[in-house]
Length: 497
Image (cartoon, rainbow, N blue to C red; front, top):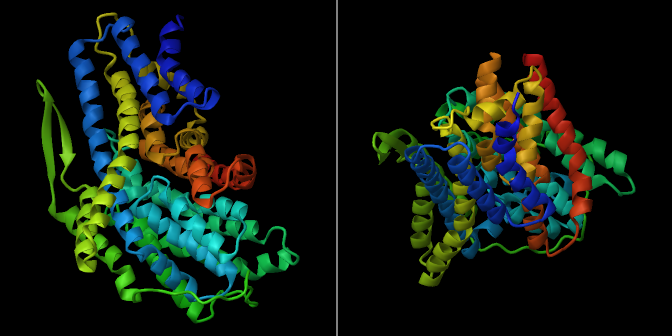
């Protein structure tokens, strides 16, 4: 058997890994060179038809444009809220209903972070939550670890469903959202990990941990269970609405003194905290956003755009990014602030979305070229079929979550991890007779868990915490919870099959 085609098939990914992990180049540069090498191989070795080269890159651009709108809209919306001090006011109300630091941390790092992940994603939850945790009194290292732990479970449906919508674009994903939400129930353990971390090093650690354990379990369940109920609305809603319901349930139970720690513990002396607007006005922007998302989901349809000679890409007019943009505009005019806020938010949105847009074009080009590589004059099998044989093992359900986590670790994105591995696992599951929805669900849940250890997210969180060179300490804090999480997901996959 000639292994040269297989070796050449994986070469773009090896180049990507080498540049990213060994040479420590940027994600954008690594993905660009990976796509360039793939294009060269398709032309020189596979002798791929020029027509399909054009179609492959064209599809990659259109899919990436979809996600550009989402990222730009999310950042634009978030910048408007930051400039208007709405995020600070929301955190004030979230912290205000309990003085216990364990309750405050879990509410912020688990429920509020899950909500931010559901609406914005792409590393924003940790960037927003970590400074708030430091403000409560946590050390920077604990704040970073806990902030990254919280940026996990909600990632399955992060950025209004982008990981499934874009990451598995072109695949049959009809049953993936409901399947993934059921497997995602394992995420209820994340607040327990958080509690273990924040009580570490304290004089009465065991007592403080056990005292708040019922609350941690309740907070975990209060998010993952409601999330399942909203899958029927679409993959855009489980993380957004699930976290809102979770927040409401936890606030009510806390007020009724159900599951609360018996002893209230503060990390620092109580200080006067100011807020500048009512609770209604603080949460109003997210209410508008949810209404627009629901209306858009059921009113707007799809538009088919021709690429070349019979090939087309279906562009969904319901793009969550449009809801973010429109909500940001509405909020801006409600608050009637100076025009500089609006212009600066647009600039920040473009700046933040441009990099991921180029990365996704590059990685999608690799995947699309591999998909169409069978259309060649060399007679060589398509590279996607060759790579799929690597995953052709009965242990696929066990490998899937770990491979997904590895992708998120490298790229800092559940979506890009799905782009990298989704087609391979989809084809392998069909060849092996496995249910592809379950395999893809294991992959995306694993990738969401891998967000805990994502290098890009760690660096971004360090930046907002104003610390440097904490990577090893952070990884030491998150790696064990991540591996436990992945092992439980893999066990579910093993038991299913």
